[in-house]
Every structure is written in C-alpha cells, then in structure tokens.
Image (tube, rainbow, N blue to C red):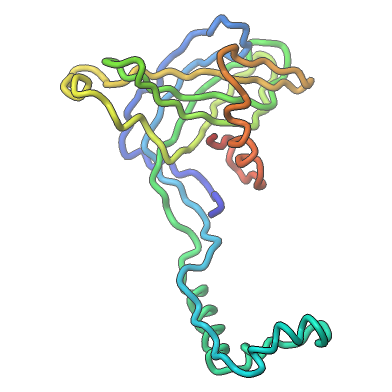
Length: 232
C-alpha cells in the first residue's frame, strides 16, 4: 500500500504540546515542543484481493510452456486465454478491480515535534525518536524512531509530523494503572542524528546507526510522496 496523506483524526489527544530544553550534548537541534495523538492514515491499495479461478486444462495448455521455450515465436497467445474459464477469470478480475475501493484507512498514531536549528549550517536529514518511559518502572521504555528529510536553515524552526502504527507501550505495571492522578508515562523526544547540507554529521554518542541500518534501507527503498518523515 502506498501512502497518500495523513489525516490527524484527533480522536484523543493524550499529550499536550510539551516544551523541552536544549540537550547540551553538542547537538545544534533544539526540541521546542512535542505531542502525539491518535490518527487515521489514508493509504492506496495496490494489490487485488481474492483468488483468480484457474483456467481449464487443455492439451494445448499442457504443451504451451514447452513449445514457447523451444519453438514458438515471440508474442504467441496463451491458449488459457481462449478457454471459457480463462475468459471468465479475466472478466471477473476486471469487474473485481473496478468495484474494489482504491483507498483504505488505517488507525495509528501521529507524532509531532517542533525543532529549532540553533547552528549556522543547514540541516537536510534528521533522525529522532519519541520515547515513552513508564513512570513506575523506568526500565520499561518504548521508542518510536523516525527518519525525516528536512531543509532547516540555521536559526530557523520547523514542525515535523510522523505517523506510526505503534503508540505508547501497551504493557505497563499494575502500579501505573492504579495511579489515576498522573500519566503512566514520562515522554520525551531525543535527536539521534543530524546530517548537514555540507556533508558533515552529528550523532548522539549512545545511539548506534548500525542498529537501524536495515530499517533505513526499507524506509528509502520506495519513492517518497508528500510525507516528511517515515518510521524506522
């Protein structure tokens, strides 16, 4: 399925737009604020659902592949297409594709972060993550990582929007569930890697690019549409 657009369905806003301070670890990217919401994404269907009936077996059918490989010139018509079953299957497929909806909606989560490039160099690529740390058990940490193609000049701000099928960590302790006065999570946004327009790179010391290399390759393996960020 190919992404068409993001619909911030805003079923429930679980986090207000929170403020954040400069990390002080050498990064030139300041996180000004962040939030997440339930969201619904519209995607385009690219595959046809349902099996196609098999064509009738004929003598020509049994020999077709062998003859095509050995003797038949290019462009020989598949004898399956001339059988009643073959013509019926082709018609049924055409009708099914015409009636099938072209798009579908997928429920997920929208992650929004506002950043400021505090350095003089323009930023082209940004790796960041939204973290959910359980208040009662800090070792229970969920990370939603994203890769964004950006163009943020020095001193400028930008709001980034990313979408993921995954939300906060669903497995939390009984203590967190019992606490009705506070959120069960502590939330924060972390900048993992900055790629500048001049070819230089800054990377967080305790973040390993090799761990997400395969995810990055998947994220960039297909052309990008209007989306700014993709999940890793």
